[in-house]
Length: 115
Length: 109
Image (cartoon, rainbow over all chains, first blue to last red; front, side, top):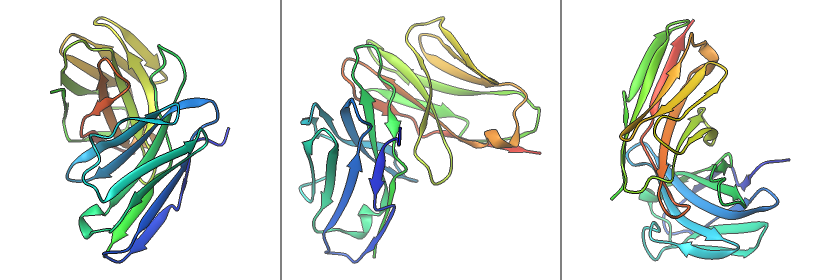
């Protein structure tokens, strides 16, 4: 299994530009999570999908952030317009279906730098 | 609000020097406590899930234990390749976990 795939691995953009991060979860996993990690705040959950439906987006910092999951094998996190404070590593994680299996499988992350 | 506090923030050990990492939590109706390992430049990697007080799990030189207020990750005779950040997370009710800030472990040869 290839694991969770994220792209790009690194993104450098200027303030005000649109940024789109992409994630392909592990096949057969029905839950998908987007996280942001910074030195100051640690690992923060942004949004959680179950069976392609957004369940909890209370962690999305503001309206500049949006996430979609059009099918079971693809999700995007978009920031428009981007700001320097959005600089962080963004992780996508997926979880297999099953009432007692909550372990999360993380992707390698996208390091975003907004100048 | 769920809270997870990990200590120490950083730990330096000599190879072979056993120690423990602590994860203290405040959550009503714990549905699982998770330990992850994160190497620099990579995503967290799942290690263990503990569900109830008194439960223990082992993997190679790692052993995780759980009480009603905290969890310990014991590292026996660590090797330099076990240098990483170890993250703890708790979950109640839904799938949504709350992560601690992690303990950065450095094992010197």
